[in-house]
Each structure stands twice: as C-alpha cells, then as structure tokens.
Amino acid sequence: MCYDWIGVGKLGMDCAEVMAEKHDVWGYDVVPRTSKTVKVVNVIELINNSDWIFIAVPTPHAEGYDGSVPSSHKEPRDFGHLAVFDAIDNINRYAKTPKKIVLVSTVLPGTTRKHFITRLDKMHQFVYNPYLIAMGSVKWDMANPEMVIVGTASGEKTGIASELIEIYDTIMQNNPRYEIGTWDECEAIKIFYNTYISAKVGIVNMIQDFAIKIGNIDVDVVTNALAKSTMRLQGPKYMTAGMGDAGACHPRDNIALRWLAQEYGVGYDLFDTIMHAREIQAKNMALFLVKLREETKLPIVIHGKAYKPDVEYCIGSYSTLIGHYVKEAGQRVRYVDPLADDRNECIDSIDSNAIFLWAHNRKITYEYTGEQQDTQPYCEIRPGSVIVDPWRKLQSTKDVRVIHYGNTRLGLKETHGLDEAPIEKPVESIKPPKPVATVDTIEIKKSDLEVSVKKSKFVKKFGL
Ligand SMILES: NC(=O)c1ccc[n+]([C@@H]2O[C@H](COP(=O)([O-])OP(=O)(O)OC[C@H]3O[C@@H](n4cnc5c(N)ncnc54)[C@H](O)[C@@H]3O)[C@@H](O)[C@H]2O)c1
Image (tube, rainbow, N blue to C red; front, side):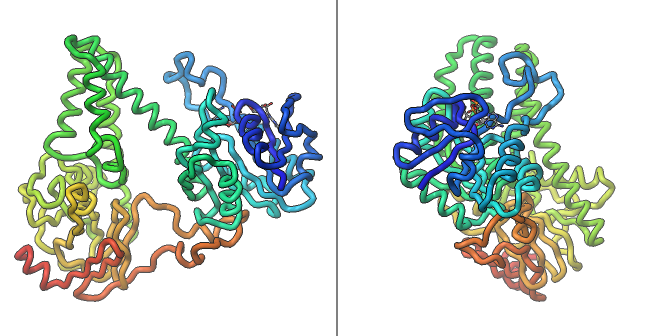
C-alpha cells in the first residue's frame, strides 16, 4: 500500500518519512523537496498514485499574529485556508477515482464543514486528523502521540476512520488512544489542547509575577504544590462542562484576587477575565432558558438553588446568577430545592409542566468520594415538561423532553455528504431524542443514572 502527502514541509516531510519506514510513501510540494525515503513527484502523478492522500499544507496566521510581537490589541483573525483550497482543487481536478483524504493541517472548529467539505468533490471521503506534534521531536511525536484524533462527518467510527487507525497501528510505538469525533469536535480537541497549555502556562507565570511583586514567595514552591494536586487540579475532576464554578470560596476568592492584581500592579487581571466569562456563561444559559420559554410558554424553574446538591448554602450560587439573568431578560424565575437556605422565589412544587434547569448533579459533584447516586427530582416533573440538563446525563422519557445543553451533535448524520455508513453504531442511535414520559413518574434512564422516582417517594423523602 502506498500513501501520498501533499505539503512536505516541517511537519509533513518528517511524518511522511516515519510512514515510509513501513510503507511506500510519495510526496508533493509547491517548492522542491528531497528525501531519502519519500518519493517526491508532481501533483498529477501523486494524486493518481494512491487512494490515500494526507494534506499537511500551511494554514498560516496573518503577519504579526504568531505571538512574537504584541497582537492582543489587534483585530482577531482566522488562519488562512488558501493552501488547503489549492490541495482540494488539485484533487478535484486530477483524481480519476475516489480518494481517501486525510487533512492534518490545523484549522479552527467549524472550518472543515463550512469551507472544505463544500468544496471537495462528492466522490471522495474525508477525515480530519490533526497532529499533536512539536518542532524538534516531530518523528518521535508522530510514533508516540498522546492521542490520535480522527474526525468524521457524524463522529462515528466509520470505515475510513477504522482503516486510518489500522494504518497508524503499523507505525505507532506507544499503542496510543484514538479519539473519534465529528470533524468539528476534532478541530476543537486539537485547538483547545493547545490553548489549554497556553492557559496553564499563563497561570503559572502569573504566580511568578505575584512572587516578584509581593515578595517572600518562591514560585516553584507554589506551582509544585499545585502540580502534585491530583485530586482536583491535575486530572479529570472539573472537566465536565455544566454549571459554573460556585460556592462559598471560589467565586469570592477570584473576586478578591482582582483587588490583589490591582494592588500589586501586575498589569493584567486574569481573575476578572475568569469571572467575566463565568457571568456571561451564566447569561448564555439564562437566555437559552428564556428562548425556550418564548417557544413553549412554560414557566422557568431552576432545579437546585443551593450552590451544590446536599447542602443548604446558597452563597455563591450559580443557579441564582442564572436566575438573575433570566429576570434581567424580563422573565420570572422560580427554584425548587428542599434544602436551600435562601427560600426567596423557592417553591415546593409546581402544578403545571415547566422548563426545568437541572442545576444539581450529585454524581458529578461527589463522584470523587465514591458517591454514585444521582440527584433525585425535588418535585413532581409533570408530563410536557422540558428539562435542560447542563450535565447531559438525563434521558428523555415518554412525556418529558430532555435537552442536553452543550451537545449540538445530534442528527448530524442526515446533513453530511462525504462520509460513509458507520460500522459500529446504527444511524438511528444519533437521532435527536423524542419526548417521552408517564403521568406520575419521571423515568430518567441511563445505565449510570437509574432514576425512576414515583411521586410518593420524593414526597416522602423531602416532605413536600
Ligand atoms: N510544525 C508543527 O509543529 C505543526 C504541528 C502540528 C500541526 N501543524 C500544522 O500542520 C500544517 C503544516 O505545518 P508545517 O509546520 O509543516 O508548515 P510548513 O510551512 O513547514 O510546511 C507546509 C508545506 O506545504 C507546502 N505548500 C504550501 N502550499 C502548498 C500547496 N498549495 N500545495 C502543496 N504544498 C504546499 C509548503 O511549501 C511547505 O513545504 C499547518 O496547518 C500547521 O498548523 C504543524
């Protein structure tokens, strides 16, 4: 089997040469290239040589946008896509048979679907497969990646995705993890992986700045203590998107640190940025509820007012922050929470169907303690209700529709044009859930969430 590469520059040539250790590999570039193991040919020869074409052409930033000179004051700019367009146009022009296209170049989320798929001839298949590779260690990184990211139209492990994994299995030295997602998810995994590193470095260097400004602080003492904090900081905890940071400590600590940043004149205020993002994220969720309210005419109820399940404390509650923005948008908000110490706008039950924001999820909050039981409904959820689940764990029942806030993937299968049938899951499995429920019972089914609560049970539990 032969594999072809369009764009054999800093990344492409080393990667092609790693492949060439096990396979026949050809390469094409707009500038002359030489290699002992990759056969460099012209574009027409290359396109008709093999079914597989890997594209590693540049997706350049605009001048002055590489980070070597100040750019944060400048207009935001996307990467350039002309070289990818050119590679696609060449494939459209010269391919006589269907090709399996693997795009390696870095692009922002949404780019492939919007710009590339619409341009590529329909007879070809397309995988987005960005690399987590660094200069200086390209060949080693290629064979020892932290993960291999494989994007398909639907996010399913399609035939082309499986074949690509089989190819990689022949060259990998570390039995890597394969992450399969939609093109858009894989674009996001790649770019947010990088920016996560930038955020981490930004935070530790901020501690360095504080060490210089405040005195009597060795930054390494602080960062080493944080580096060893595997319970909450380094690891999967807090990696489930959902409600915002809340409680008696976190928001107020950040809010107070804004003062410290000003007091010592560090020159920037990451805390303000974090708290501002937290507020706008709450507002976005509130406006989502308000839009649903306008569509359904149902009242908005926030299910959980305390800042987390099993406690009464409403201090620093993200639920009330969302409630604030619901009211700011001109809608009424009510809360159900049998424990909440702030009873303002709290109700014990609602005698109509409603929009519920499922703010509490016990399992996610307390999983690290070994706790497995999920939040039980705090009141009767009447048929025709809609639950907005920011944790994406509940399932729709016969009468209650659950919306997974943060998952916009459902139903993609119907819209794509350049993928083939999945080999692992049936198409039906990714259709949007249909509303389902019974009268006195809300059945929220999922293997890890077996909640089936009859009215009498929660009335008894919470004395409602
Ligand atoms: N370099 C890295 O460490 C790295 C790591 C991960 C991802 N990436 C991504 O990979 C892509 C390539 O990066 P790079 O560092 O290899 O860039 P590069 O500029 O070194 O290499 C790109 C090659 O493509 C060639 N080229 C340009 N236009 C072409 C066209 N229309 N047809 C054929 N060849 C063309 C160039 O001549 C060059 O040799 C970028 O999207 C980059 O963001 C790079």
